Image 1 (cartoon, rainbow, N blue to C red):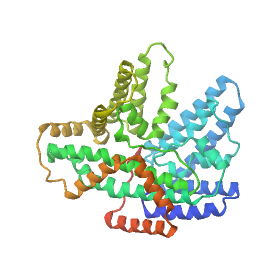
Image 2: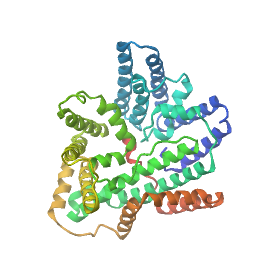
Image 3: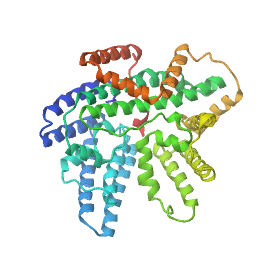
Image 4: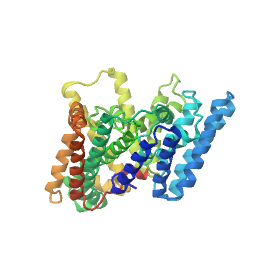
Length: 446
């Protein structure tokens, strides 16, 4: 059940009305959320109904144990058990070829036990709340990775859904559908997939346009999913953390990772990078090697191949270069023309790395780079429509943030019938444009 399909929105509307009809009774409200979570999983594969409850139950009791015992050895054993359990789920889902991986479930579940191990939070006594939080359905396909403690806190402090949050939720869902169906899927179907499948059939210029198109496709696909997920949660009164902030406006690779997949970046930093040995050592080499290790592992999480390892290594190397540059010149942000140049350089470095991420193998990477280097120029396979969508995607990405907030507030202040009319017009328009149906979100396979 993809978040961009009509089936999902029928499901969401049903859960919305059922949830708010019982929201004053906490146990019933949590039961509705849990039912929604497990129904969502079951729509992908019934085997999840055996896997997820069992794993969540184990983590719940591990959490109680971490809360109760001061014994260091026992605490390490408990948190290790949780890590092995959740990392094992990722491997299990891939080995058994389940419909979706359990990566985002595992990362989200681990925030609870790792935070308890570090004594940053207290364990919940509510078994129902824990089950509902770790498997919260808007987050389980591709995030945003939300700390379980943040969800639990919101479950405790329930408040009615106000008109502003409802309007913002609808705006985000509509925006997410536009990003996914009208931009990402269009770019993929009209150039990206064809070029990355058979790069030697296209000129160097067309290969280059395909690389730029994929750079935009993956952003609009993933951020579109995120908008729908955040909007869906907001309809249930739950606020999820932001996951994107105009990443291609970053002025270096470190800045890019503060803007791209923010919740994964924070997870890797807080739970992996800071856990690696040597950070407190006087030897700075550990800082750099740990950056590289973190990013390579992050790459391999996306897939066990040289392509993803190289993609992670490129970003790790970029982070090291930024760190060394900042030590040498200070941490003053770039300004003026130098800032523009640094943004352009960063975008092209990221786009180059995306070739390894998207290509099915290294042979395809070599073919794409060779075709680009050939200097052959023809745009016969780049349609007028694709040029238009590319222009819209670029302009929309670089619009000032205040313009976005102005648009959101304008929609929120509009009467309900105007909001409903805008959503209806959007649905009709999307049906006309995306007649072939929605393609899977890119990150649902990781």
